[in-house]
Length: 121
Image (spheres, rainbow, N blue to C red):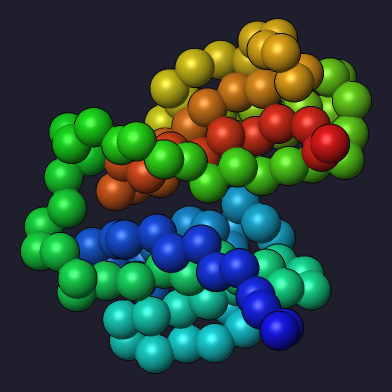
């Protein structure tokens, strides 16, 4: 069986969220409708932004999952990414720190969804 993994992130405004994630990822969507937009992250992996499933998502609601951007870089490069995101005004939930899997930081999108940046395994 051939399968893809699609990570779905619920958002209030799919086009606005696509601009946010497109800027972070440095890429354009691979598929777009008014309420569902995807980014092709590579063979078998997509990030989907879906609006209209829950009305008025609140960033105050506790999030129990994360989108993790696993990057192929060292600690200095991760810190540079953190500084770039911070300069863009992206909400930072936890500054760079060392964890069991390496250096990481945690941010949030405008809807309060968590975005972790961590080293690629």
